[in-house]
Length: 63
Image (cartoon, rainbow, N blue to C red):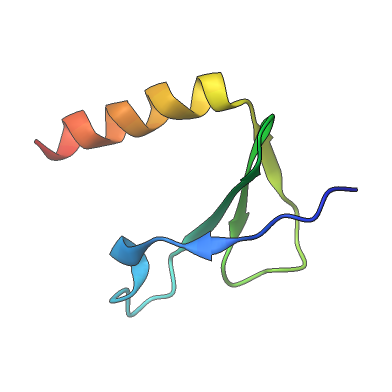
């Protein structure tokens, strides 16, 4: 299995409820996402081509 280098979003640092996700983008063919509270739990694997539209939709919601 690949080694994912998970990082927490800078937007998550002030979350008092611990509702954070971590994302690993160090594997070129995969974006891995996991719950910060459960680092040994399941990992969602997403193709990079699907990840970009997802992020774009989040940014458009905030605008």
